[in-house]
Image (cartoon, rainbow, N blue to C red):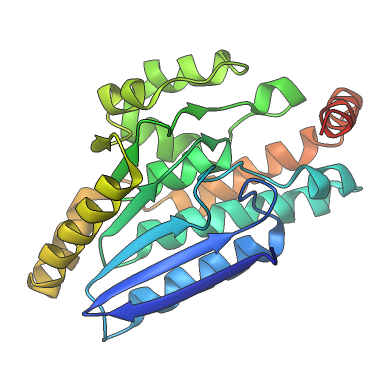
Length: 252
């Protein structure tokens, strides 16, 4: 049950897997490891495609660590914490290889950001999504550019405002967040493997150039996402947020 980020490469497919016993939530240490691992895999000459997945068979990612959010004491600490989500999204954006996301369960908050930052996403029918940030007095500021790029302003607004409600995997597929949705994990795993194998056989330079084209217009995200981290880092210190985080933690 120890948190981890690990990666392995087989047949030019690099799998990056993260795990945390609290619903695959993401404390700062895991975020650092995830960004570094994606960056390293992107530079490796031994692989042509990345698969991003989480451990276990339940939640894909519960988002930010509530324990760590509650411990933030200064604006600087808040900015540093949320900037780590910015670093992960930018690492995925800048990776010269296509990233396939394997989503076996629910994605909340920052987990939705990971899904949106992937180049192609495959999920099961259990993979409902929710942006819950407003319920604790912050907002999905850092991940919003990635989410809006994928599903548009209207759907992003819907998820953000309906912060207590999960939307189904079917909804996410209809909006373009998911590319494929499957009934079972076995079907999901087979399709991820099949697609990864196909991509691994393609010309790496062609895929690199294609990814650059697909992400045109996001070059300013290096600065934008850090600015957004500053907004979240300030809001997390509010009395409303501190009370809300305490209430949420007391229910667990």
